[in-house]
Amino acid sequence: PRAKALRLHGTIARDIGVRIVSGQLAPGRVLEGEIVASEQLRVSRTAYREALRILAAKGLVESRPKLGTRVSESRAWHLLDPDVVSWIFSAQPDARLLAGLFELRAIVEPAAAALAAARRSREQLRTMRLALDAMATESLAVEAGRQADRQFHSALFEASGNPFLASLTSGIAAAVTWTTIFKQRGAPLARNPLARSTAACTEAVGPA
Image (cartoon, rainbow, N blue to C red):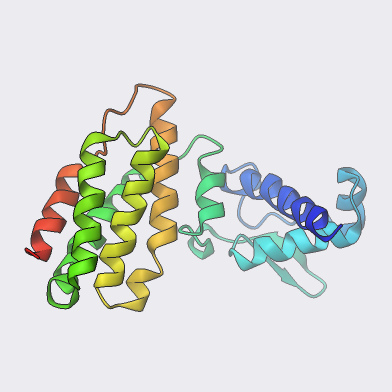
């Protein structure tokens, strides 16, 4: 029963979250009260309340006494939360957002590599090189390619020795996955669009 309840909370949160990040529910919009909303959705008030808590934790909504729950400004959204990333790509993502995701990787990866050059272990370097080899042969359109990309970034950020960089791993992995899926809706993506940049990062780390 608990697992089913958690799935229901997540489903409600996803449905509302997609409407928020797609612009259907604009920043400042006051959401329906829990009594009305739960009746419209045909769910319990508890389920709806828990869904709002999920959204609040991701920065998408904020609740204030007597003012109700309203959609937060986009600057408050936790854009690297894996759920938020997936919700963004459930709709038509903004071109500026797509560019921003790739810019983020282009900025973060070299910085992480510079730190890893001084701090990495032989095992971490080996993991990065194996992942890079897989990325050179597997497209991000398949799970093997995406898994290799996740392994590379996990090892790179861990090797940096910076816990804040390490915390970016899941968010960037989600961004890679959903950007790829989005691109596959149009023309097939032959390989990682940042493979050359990724290779440069590995070289910057240095030899084993």
